[in-house]
Length: 223
Image 1 (spheres, rainbow, N blue to C red):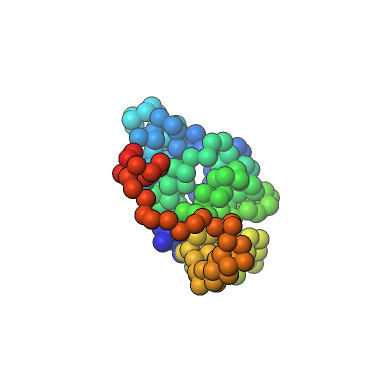
Image 2: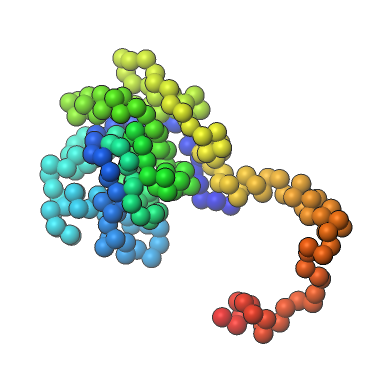
């Protein structure tokens, strides 16, 4: 089973970080990738901007170091957020900091895929809308509700804003099931197809054989 967390909606404070082309090396620098596990990346998020020097004191002017945005659940960002290398730790760092959703005009493709596979909601909206909310959030606390079921974002005092989302990815997030989980729901049909195909094309299937011995190539016992 996957470790994907089901996501139906996210309600929380929005933090504005309207810079374009924020890459994964800013989100989680390679020098900060030291943990042998998935944990421990929250304090390292945006390390070049959050700290005056590696391991040093915080930069007080950075938005996520300031109240109330330390408690933000939603990040408002510029175009091409998450571009650069494919490191999955970038998503882990965002989630472990406490962010559950990023709203931006566009995303790096691999980063967006990593978001889906880790239960972090990436929402694409027009730059004008994101910028308007970012301006509001910079002036006073702005609370948003991002509802994946209705594909709408609610903000106090304004009509809800609709957003598009891939149907298959939406279902993965709503159910907490990744692509393998969803395929495995059809296990009976898959096994029935395999049985029929073995009869129809026996030459395409490996012959039954005795269990491998440790001298077989690739056997875990010989590695």
